[in-house]
Length: 153
Image 1: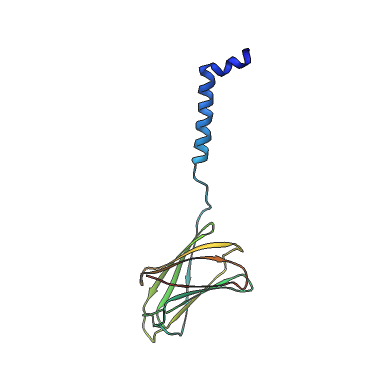
Image 2: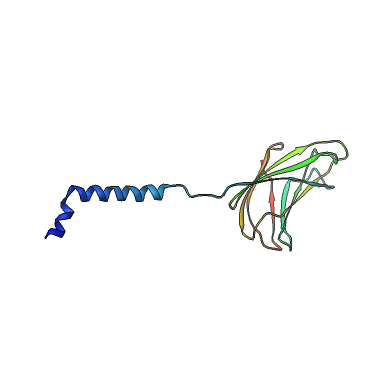
């Protein structure tokens, strides 16, 4: 009788409410993410057709490095530059392309090689502010994998 009378006290309901509020507060906390890593890579400019449709070609090499080939690179001469600013936060990757026109004959492709990816699935967002184009894709980093994605406006 005395044990069941505790369920009728105010103190019991106050303690139960505090415990319930603590459980809700812990479940509402944002998950902790790893610190973002940032990289800046210069491209190797290659000859190609600058007037073709802009595309991204991701290829995972046998050694695990990822090669990114950007085609349809209009308005960039062989003395120009294509720089890729990359932010990796966990498995989310944001790539920002920066183009500098430069002089000389036009090139059509830029190639970057990245060696900081692990053997996982990555969600990649690619933006080119100078052209206003973007792409979004998932890349499974395993040797032999190739992903082709058009850059859209």
